[in-house]
Length: 297
Image (cartoon, rainbow, N blue to C red; front, side):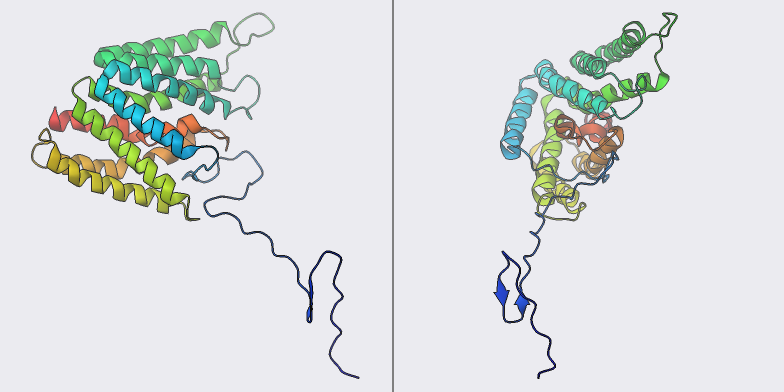
């Protein structure tokens, strides 16, 4: 009798070999995806590329529409950005639905406040300030008089709900107003900053969706911004001296900051496609606008 153990009999539905049954392997997880995790945390600070839906088509439509709006004028650009900012504000507010009742932001209030601020930007700094004051005052009034009430009928608005509602509106508005304010003073600077945002988003999504390392996508976006800067320095005479290189270097630093800061504004891992459409402009939009105004007027 041989001392070797007899092969294990194959189970029903399993292919058998001379050495025993072959267990089917678990399907490989698609590259660029992440395994769902329980809980309501924000997930990774650097957002994982969202592969759901016709992302390429939507990205092309967004790029064409944004570029066309910049070329037409500041009012059209504000009208293009305002609906996206309003939807993004609602998505941010809804991501906090896990908070206790009475401490949640109000999506409808955040939507209105974000749209008002963006629509004030085409009229310069005065219009933006008026939009911010109207948005802040309207948010406080709406939540005070139309919000929950105590047993004695007095307003029972929790400060956390008011702050979160205002932050939900401010984030998308801040991302949109920079290009709009720049367009009020000329087409070139506004076109450059939205081009930086578009190429960063495209490269980050395309390259990031093919790797499990979250930092590869932003690195590709930075490389594309550097390439675009070379062309800008040689094409546009509006950039005097080394201003094109200085503003390009600034974009390299601030563009990657937008998506993680946008993640911090979200209360959960809920999908926020409109917010992710604007997130690369969250820091770059206002910061780059200020330095562009100082360097090129």
